[in-house]
Image 1 (cartoon, rainbow, N blue to C red):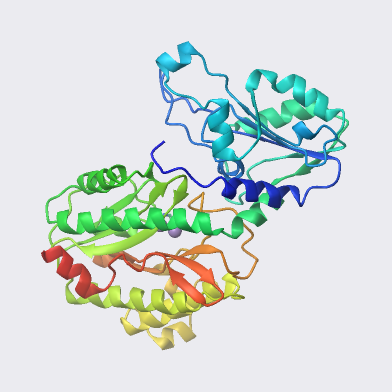
Image 2: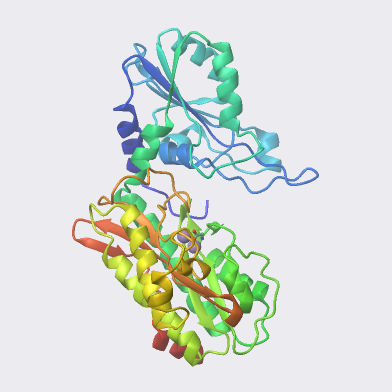
Length: 429
Ligand code: GLY
Ligand code: MN
Ligand code: MN
């Protein structure tokens, strides 16, 4: 494991919160993710299910968590099953959790080997009336690959068709919206590593370097600081690529006089950072680049101030559009008169600003949670306005991660350079 041991109180409290929402006489079952095949006999590095990690801290394949808070057999109230390791696995794959380690990581007293699962669950099901099954619920999620939880849920309901089934996702998604102090600490650590990587590339970038070489600098700094890697595939977009919102080829040469837009973030202990910055490749913004940059930065600052308890995300979305529209008029891209006469279904700002400005983040970079809920203390969201002028090869996005508190927004990326003078100074050092 690359990260320092996480206080198991995090997982103990998460389970406590979840079980307090379960109906009487009910059992909940959670599965870890599948290992995803790469090619030949290779697998991609294992990615744990965020929900499973959130409830256990266990980042190992083929693990099962069962919660049955009022089970008449006390030792079955909270159970973790982990893969039984053996000498062969130890030689070929290395270390797997022992029962003691799984107990210390998760705070779950009763840890059993996976091969005991079927018999124990049969016994538990004899006492349960309701069963909670988990399934990832995120509006934009679509995949042709069936997840382990979907597959095993199907097998489970076929085996026990007469119990009453419920969804865990609404409870978990609600819980995961509010980050605990331990989670905030982990997100801060991801932001801190992201800061180091950004400062490293400020020194590295100059005309003629390749985008993928910049990516290598970032990933070097991530690894050197114990990050698992990227929280999402990084966008390293120079020149006109800066206007392609999800550009990930990262294979072009950075040209003198053009901009370089980054959107990257470290993942530390499964928690994401999500940052965007835009820099001049030769170390100095030209007048037009600077004007657009300052316009986006003003919008970022105004929107961040609005991220207070009670604010609906729809209001932030509206504000991002009207603030950007005002800036675009200021930049001379269209006039107030043209805005008055525009087709309301096709507002002019949409040519230069086409994406949302906030999303929840945490274990997932686009974290689960109800977007209809106004901001609450403990939520962590991005703030990410941008302006993209393709004809001028100017794409600028600035993105920070913001913690909502009773005392106002806290920018978790306050240490990451963003002012023009700071960027230019650091690039010249
Ligand atoms: N990095 C993805 C996003 O900004 O939403
Ligand atoms: Mn984002
Ligand atoms: Mn981003």
